[in-house]
Length: 377
Image (tube, rainbow, N blue to C red):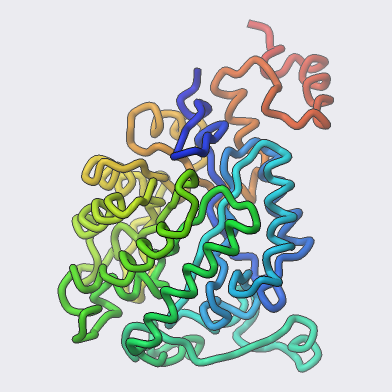
């Protein structure tokens, strides 16, 4: 059997295979509410055979969104439309996850495809435009020369307590919506990552200074979420394993942190990187896989590899060679929502069991054309 298409179990959750859809912001929500776009966007990945589909970064507070168009999970009214998506993912054999997020100083930024805040008054009303002052560990802009980023307000002790409570409340809502797992977002230069990195955290209290202090908030959030998240459901954390900056967070820091996260009940680390101004990222196929292997080996915890993956044989080799335990696609999944179906055949599957039963005509086409398992030797 293919390593990539072998089942995988985390606590009480067994995934049908090791393919994952990574969170992808769609900037298409109003007041944080999921809608038909999110349903169609996410549903096609479950139909395409992925084992786990993780919903986009969802604000644990309204002020924690990257933009006014992000999904939210800060109020009970947001549960029902999320549950509708979860139910469909389950009906197609996929597990459902959601990323619990707070953007920190990178919040309240323009929608990705617009030219800054160029909305007309009519569009502001139609799309639910909002703009606010973000919060962060320190009152430092993400990019002082970029007008899209504001100077944030530094969180005080009460603000930190409220933040932890917001993550807990969001996790309770995720459970009510039926999600199989939640992923705490501590990557890409967003709030929890800002606390981790010396590039953004200039505090002099118990949440700043030493590595131990800079890890404190993420560990407190993790402890609080794990305490209320059902014991049979796995808990994930996404890390930027490296800031790609000589003065920032390093791989060895992530290994130490991952050991602490594992001790607090985290079941797997989603290994990404970068997120701060001035990073020198070396892009290329599999460029983040060494991060997943370093954390896997150094912290003895399952990891998820992500970033410019998509070659079927490379994905199989990553799992088979023990470089990571899961393969996550984002842009690759957008390009080919049926990537697992196609990869499964490429790696030797001679049946069509992973395809939705409504798509059985693909088998008939392949038989007529001599494709896949019907190809002549």
